[in-house]
Length: 232
Image 1 (tube, rainbow, N blue to C red):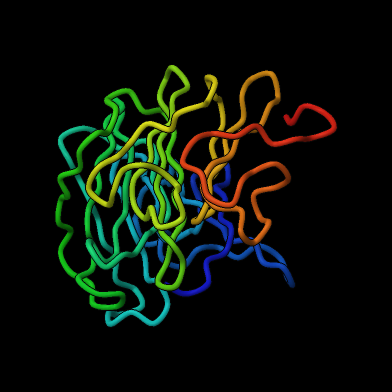
Image 2 (cartoon, rainbow, N blue to C red; image 1 turned 90 degrees about the horizontal axis):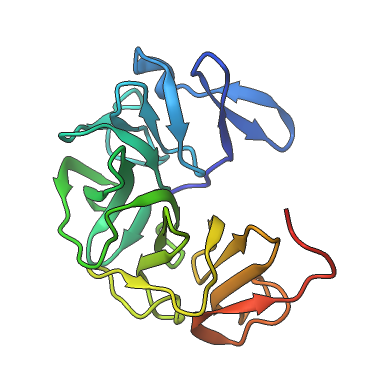
């Protein structure tokens, strides 16, 4: 899906991308929405505007005009959105959290670069009180989406080839072995979460050493990662 850049929102609801070798640049796609942006995915491809709609912009080498936008509206406002993911089951997908805590996912392309009208996906095992979402994926990376509940549980779905969870692309599973967590991060073949006291727990694969010291090669349960001091 191209090479995403970290994104942020200014106090007026404008979306910007951070660049390693230059100043931040205003997002071309979301400046067309006409209303301020309230939340933006980590990869910068999708955002939630202040009307509660998910809006996704151009992804690089897509077969549509540069100024084309995909808009997703449901019966209640969205408040969070995850990064785009891609797999052989649902192709290109975006998931968001509604104000009521529901996780709703839509396929927005029937192939990596052939965009289509958003199609609602029916997924099993998702909690009804989610407050945070994180996703990592793309055309060449394992896709993984996780949500954190109000009580601090974590449920994941998507690619499970590296023991990221016990579910599937269509069924979420609760990650065992975790305390109540307050922050969530997803890396594709693994994911991590932080508890209030500063402990960090990870699950999935550490074959490349990216998940930090202490995680077995492949495990779908949370494992405490060793740090010299609490993580904030």
